[in-house]
Image (cartoon, rainbow, N blue to C red; front, side, top):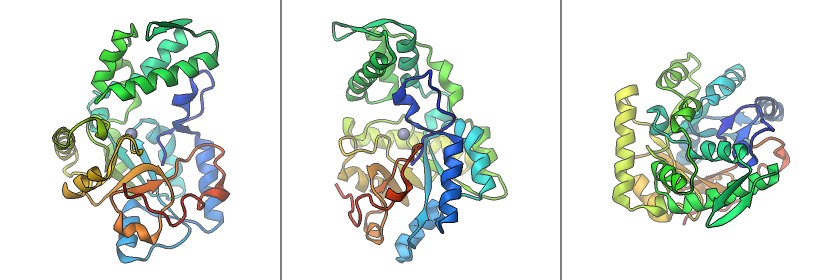
Length: 301
Ligand SMILES: [Zn+2]
């Protein structure tokens, strides 16, 4: 699991930078694993192997969440050079330029200010460390409070944090960017589904979830002529998404769904195609540990 592919910027705050893998590290990761006999497979191949019980050891499937522009700017050439299939689970609101990336608005605000009032308490923001800590504190509060990104903007405004949401829109992939990658002759990209508004499933009811997914379906269908069949839960951790959601996604006709729960995939997962675990790939990831996560365990609740 990846999110952003771009050089690490030491002027920015850690929590957002942690969503990144640097292009250099990504390429060395690919070369290293290829040299050690690993095979990179697409999400379609992964699911077919699980269904047919033919999944080989040393298989790697790269999936990327959200739909950031840097996936094309920095990632695509690396994937193309080494013929690596990848799936980008895209939020339809990213494509529509309605994403409201409040986490970048919050970061810029904290970087530009030397203190902030949060919960009637004045927090000093003199050092990078103080800013990182404040970011995590406010992010946790926002995530617990919001259902959709739009609500986050209101919640931040109540705290006196104003930002121009449109400023960050170009950090997302555009329709043309997706078309460009889908039309590439090497056929490496799979377009995945990541809802419209990236809501926390446990914070909203099933009807609202279905509406959000339908809204994204219409957008994908109108622009690309198909609805992506592989799904990634937005916020796929244990507190954000539950077993009933795995069943809901299956009932909506998707072929597979990935969580953010930590683990590698084994034959056993053929029975849990809607709760597939992943491993968060970051710079300096220890490759020797890659197959040690939750060995032979499945995530089912
Ligand atoms: Zn996401």
